[in-house]
Image (tube, helix red, strand yellow):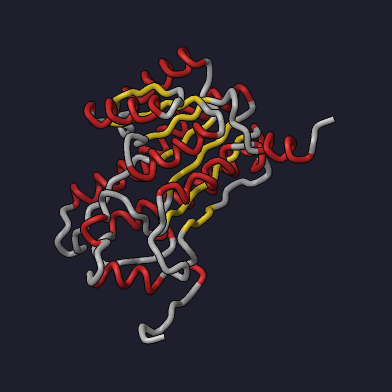
Length: 268
């Protein structure tokens, strides 16, 4: 007989699973990858910068995690197919795909070149489609798999100067729901995570006392703080584990409550 506590832990165990995290060399991708590895998963990390990949793999291995890395462009269908086939040949399978690789261009819509708009859509929306399609082929054959798309609060809200990013992340929300609908009969769950505002190296310059945007985010977030990257780990583990086997086509926003509230006056 399995003890209740052990049974609960088994629900979230990723032991024996292979998790592929695109853009897992730094930032939120690394934080989620660490969470998956801490639950027992073997990591397969993708990126496109050799120096970052080298640092990331050393970081994972220093923590005692099993990790390999592959450098390729997720928007290049042919290249991506070659690497997915290679990874499946090496590991036997890909149980979990986290579509985290993405870019943003903060340019007002009137000034944005169409080529820049297309680039963001290509990386943030077409890339996840390519990777999901390639990995799902084997998942369909095995009748098992988890795909986690990293969406955004911009999947729901607009904001100045991020028209391409918001369009891509809104599209990724609907891609998540459609793929979940198509692949649910094969026991594949496709869900999304929508991070709020997180303390990363990219946001460090604006996370200083007195910066208007820093003050705005803290005031706008009911939790009263920026998210820490490790705050995403639990959600990633849940959506990658059998604990979420009947959760499909959903977006979980990890935002400290921003989307739950209209906000409050600055003087309250």
